[in-house]
Length: 517
Image (cartoon, rainbow, N blue to C red; front, side):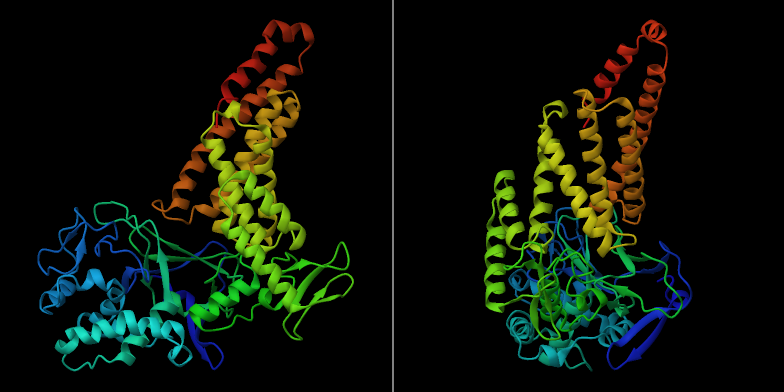
């Protein structure tokens, strides 16, 4: 683990429990922590996968006869293998009870690394808040009962493994684990299933819907923490457990049910969500007003005419929109219909509408990639450009610093701008000077996208996108040079221009770049 002692100071309060503040002034983009996971394992209710590399399982460990592996993995962690080998478990136990893997691995720390075990058990589990809830009952049925009935912890000598202890471990795993994507094994082979890791130092950072740090898990399950904005000494270091384009209700529901706390950050306390209106709906009285929820009263009030909406009406509108958007086929016309309908009832930037717009961008991207560039309908290019521009306008407010989502959106925006500009030049709707201006703008957006994505490990989808973006930046700069030369040709006198073949230069540009995607 690197960076914790130099950059973090652990404090404690009644409201936040243990939390961390910056030990010194931190610059934007600075790596402030590198931490390896104490425990890794499959997500809750995941399909059975190899417990060594998390790729699809197709064999079983020949030593313990219990742990699923893949064709390439012949063994797994020796202490774990020995535990299952001596437990006399039914050979189908793990396959039938795959949710026990992470709790068992936490308990095995008691034998292999007592210091780490103690550190894990000191993590926040919110045991009392969870007791008697739906998730408590689920863990009782699918983790606690199978483990206790198996009798495998009779060999743990001085540690009494009770249902309460297992529930505590399930709670701290739910509250403190982070997603692992793009993981590779020692041979560099990438996993195909999502996994999660437990990082005690990283988990000390409190949640905020506008975090000042960015987490990036590298190809070997190590988490790297970067600052997204400058952070002053003594300032609380935040991470986010929610998606940025979720509205306040959805974020709070996720945190309440999964993490058992309520967020009181600046964004959550602002009914307009910093002016983005991700949770606001159209006023039924005036044409321009948006009704936002004021939790202090509580009420849904219009920002123009101050009309109050009944909560029953709001719930009905929201439920209908959610059902129709979730059930909408992945087809451009269907998505456009549902976006148009609910933009009028909710608002164009409502989180549910924005979700549909993100899906639509994906469908338009698929059309562009599966069609010859010259054959892509111009309305498709124009619509993709407009959507990327709109999504970016919201994301830049919610994630003003370094942002994975902004980086992805900037890349797609640059692609749409370049493709549309080439097509418009090809049909003489814009002149070469306009083409050059658009390409230079796209170059700037692409450079910003790369700066946002360079923090991602090369095995993740975002890391792969960063590599692709760097190749395309080089190609775009070459294209800009060609357009500049073409403009210089256009400045010559007509006779000289004819002698040098200016029309050929234009045709050569169209021939070379009009067919590129």
